[in-house]
Length: 532
Ligand code: NAD
Figure 1 (tube, helix red, strand yellow):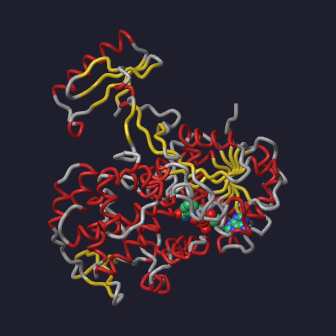
Figure 2 (cartoon, protein in one colour):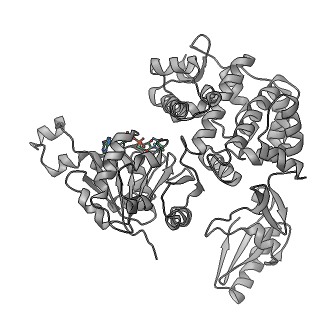
Figure 3 (tube, protein in one colour):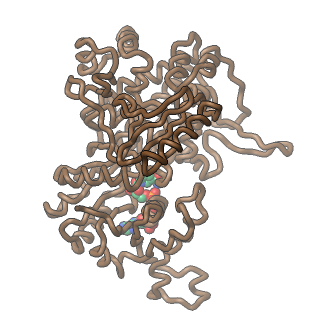
């Protein structure tokens, strides 16, 4: 049985240190290695240390571990878990990776250093050791040039999102020669041990979430400029009203870093072959100017928004993209936005917004339709299933609904008709799916959820270790039930008490079910969990 007992994380920057922290959170000790510094700090000089002192040579990783305690949200579940991370450096300690089961490369985003590092890692590699990269966009296969076949079989991409403890998404990207058993292992390990939502991505520029997400952001800016909308108007439309996070479009960019966004867009543009797609990934001039000015978002104190204190009052000003000047935010009134606010659930909200009858509804539709079509066009190229694309957007961008889930919510057939009427060309597989009589991408058959795979409905994948209460209920595993809660047999002698009242409010129904469940569990079960 393959197991990961110890790991090595190479690169102790923003991501590396936090990935080591997350491994510590799940009880996996790791070595954290980085470069050897070439100069002494003032503090080291004062202490009389020389460049060959271990404290100096391990400084980057040691400092990175210390910084973990200052980050918010906290990367470590408990501060003392930091002792599971051993700092070291790439000159004195690289040989120690022979003691670990998994090496994850998290160094600078540049092909040549990554390639050279993998060459050095291979010198200490042993059969069975998994090696992966956290690259956001560099080709896995290109990185492997010069490596042995055995090494290539054990290598893959494991792309965490920042912050890795909190962002649910883990994109697993097999290389051309990765052993399928290792891909499967990483998928289960990522889900069950690391607690991530794992999707399988293909070795294409920026993989799934960043490819679709960046396209969506660029389309948003394009539609915004076409329609003469402001930054705050776009954020009002592309946040919870559309089933997306409050940070919507421009707050998200400020949080992620506008330079990072430009880097991803450029990487896709430089690495895709289709001229139309290259054009779609050209960064608008206004955004390029922000990067030139160093207005990168939160980390530089200003981006699309800027916090100021005026007359003793805190205020958030917004950037005018035409003049590049900050001004006060304007209030927005929109019947479509209002309808969305009144509607329930992400699907209801998005539908109410898009089916509204004002310019904001039109803006939402113009953005959404292009993202839906692009996602459908990329199926097969960036991922094999719509489930992987939907999950990547939910877990990587915190959307409530992935593109195909949103399309279903809006009505597959009606939405396709409107798209065609407006001159959009739908991918052939979508046309064929509709022509075959399907009314949705996700459909239920025999109590199982299915999705289109090569033109046929196939069951969606249920991740390892995930309990699906809805499926258990359908399978007749409900032991007791009232309008507030259900007691469900999970198997293995464990029962689950599930609350399902409105907003999980605890009323007499739930109280009654708690008493009943405890009595049943004491008699018939080894354990009882409360969950939903
Ligand atoms: P970073 O700049 O914070 O850290 C990179 C670390 O690598 C530094 O500690 C640096 O000393 C070390 N390093 C640089 N050159 C090296 C070399 N030649 N050999 C060994 N070590 C070297 O970068 P980061 O943001 O942590 O990103 C690391 C990787 O993770 C990149 O591939 C990046 O694309 C990817 N990634 C980043 C994010 C993010 O949000 N920052 C998210 C997902 C993936």
